Image (cartoon, rainbow, N blue to C red; front, side):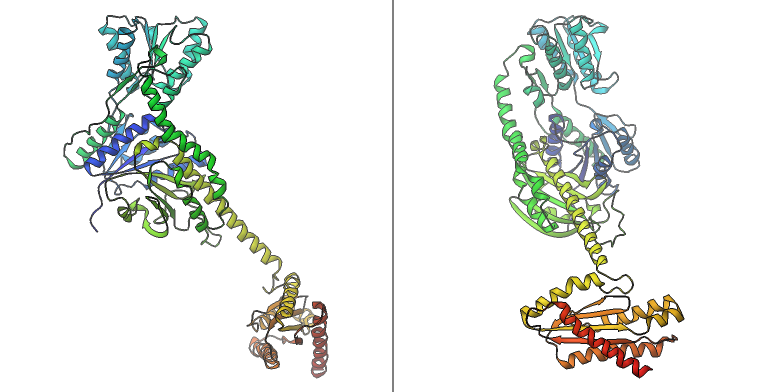
Length: 635
């Protein structure tokens, strides 16, 4: 088989917002043009703690080995866990493959950022030139943060270009989040800080929180103050009032990262794929309505490609349906019924670790927490509307099985999400979308999470059923001999009587009593008494070759019950087998005592309505007759 295409690993916290999605679009398009497969490793949850669920999510990154990919694009800026970022640095700095970081500075690799200053300059120009604003503030990110400082420089450049003063109080360093925005709004509302004519915010999130907090405090937007954001996010367009913002060329940033990585991998230069240009979206927060048609179109597009499928997911009852599955095969069938929820899905594979549920470990299984083991099995494949239920093996070093080429012959972007419950690793899912823009929705991550939960539910249910069976068997088995106890005998004897009546076949009952148990106990000890009990049980149980049940029904009493076409010769053969077994044992045991059994039987088709005890009594009486005869001979 020819060598696989070169592979670029993309490490991301998630793909579920416009900012990340546009970077993925750029990476995907540039990888396709240069002939790379892009493997995106991501989490559905992005937390800062050391919880078990976070550990289970982070495990997906363990698939990335020094020799499994040709280069890495590391998008660390969106990870909530600083420990995880430090782990990335420690791990990947030791690899001998090139790494490019997007929007985060590392000492061991090159970092690239979007060109933010010029777009922010554009939006500041708009406030000055179109609205005549002169007193303008800038709410940027943390001081020293590269994107925050770049966006601040764009604001400064516009103010300087128009001869406007920038005072120290006109610059507020924020957090790219809501805390600083709300604090700033409180200062304006209380009068502690003078309200400017316009505020340029370094991202949409801060702008929305500022805008909404001001309106709640009685300050009108845009009449009293105009506000802009940066990101061109769907949330900004959905906000009331809609937010004037910049649609940045993050796709260009993603494509540029691939080009730089390509240079490090091959030594060759490449042109960045022509993608979208940045654009100014003018909306209600600055008093403009030129972009109303654009906003309506974006709203309709979002509904068709995101909201509609989110609604499908919410109404599907997917998790409840999956939890009805009683076997893994049943679960795979049920999963297939819900692929319609995944908008734009081209190929999906469910990859499970070998013995993912510990069912082959005989109770000695320490579940898999770190890594994925060597052997992986693809159990479900969806491609172009066709579902395949398979068990095709590959190794975790491959990450994606070689037979993926049958479904995806062209360079493609694949998303890998962990399948786990807390820190218990089951495997991972592989998603390939026809249009990367569809990954802006979290539906496929929630869809994948439902699979994780249902696998755990199935595993626990099967484990409980196994435990219940073991407990049930323990309750009807004799602990000394391993054959059925009195409870087991009572449970099955009536069933066998009913079977004999229904099928008009002979009911066989053999009753046995161990000879001289008290004498053995008194003279040789209870250990030897137990040995005699166990030996007699083995003699009786080993003669049961036609699905009869053998039980210890008292301290030194036993019974065999069966249903079949028994003849007198067959019954005699059972007698002879038991007696010969004990004779051979006594000749070779070297014990100071002999193990003997007194036997009685009943064997006939049960007629009338007599209960089991009536037939048992016949065999029991015959056993006592046999015991009396044996005692006379022994005496």
